[in-house]
Amino acid sequence: MHLGDRFWVQRLSRMYLENVDENRILEELGKVIPHYAAERQHGEHLGDFVVCAGYVRAVESG
Image (cartoon, rainbow, N blue to C red):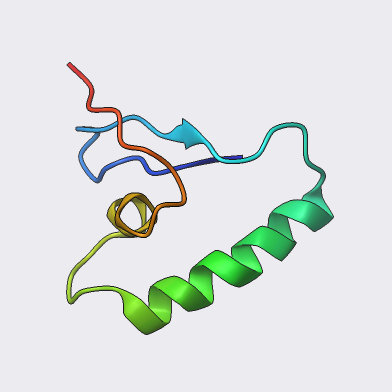
């Protein structure tokens, strides 16, 4: 499961969890999405949020 890519591909996604099944993915998204909905900045994309919230580290492309 990868998270943290940037809108317009300026940042690559990073591995958040490795070798997980569909149920685990849904469980994790069930935590991340409500957190994003509650705390994101106006206009902030999910990829930017998960980096700012510390779910994954940023790696800029190019």
